[in-house]
Image 1 (cartoon, protein in one colour):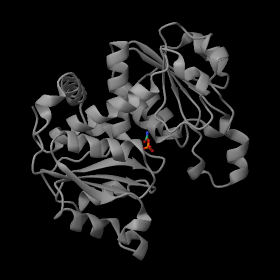
Image 2 (cartoon, protein in one colour):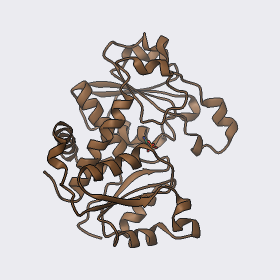
Image 3 (cartoon, protein in one colour):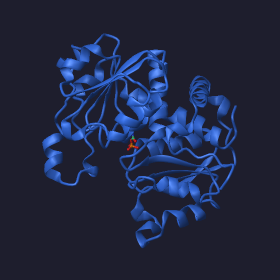
Image 4 (tube, helix red, strand yellow):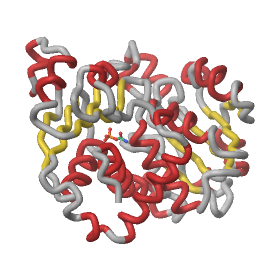
Length: 308
Ligand code: CP
């Protein structure tokens, strides 16, 4: 359907649009009351074929905060997908029930298929190991608000860089800002995908290194982006068990980091950040989850063409 704006990938937004969206999210954060009726009469459908806490509930909170209503399902089992209905048929139907849809799906590209058949804006709320653009908006708001800039940063990404869709989306977004360098820290089996290395990093002449010792990288970082090893994407449990505790951020490792380094994590956390780190002022992952509501409020306004 033409003239409908979807969000599949953070690259669907120009840098100017990204900056405007973050500025809107910041205005909403500063004065939420001003937006409390902005979506009156509008409905958001959350179609989640895969588990979620933050993304689904922050989308729902975002629409409720804007004065709209929400409907949806939180697992494939509780929808007619369990009876074999296609994503294309589902979105055709949802298009007549709601004004905008956030969709999470374990298959890469499923929200894109939905967007082709949709009469309403579709937002990719995470597709397999591929992309998670609204997590990236959350990450960008966190960095911008707490670090004051999106340029001139050395970002360490640690953990499951192969399956971690939040990593892929954040790299794609950040390479568009000047003087951003990356240090990728992972076991050899969980390195960044080839397409990210060749088509995004090398093509944009971005400085990056691939390393395997977190302690060695710590002193060089402005941001440390920790990730969980994605059990649900592994083909066998043995490999998951072998790799899951490769990197555990603890108080001792934090002592190696600059005083103003920030620790981000898209959450959920499993073992990769010891709870003793939570009280360190540099640990901002719960604040990051909070910001997710404001960027999703801004995105809903933008895609519904209700910009303030
Ligand atoms: N960060 C994130 O996507 O969390 P959920 O899986 O809980 O939505």
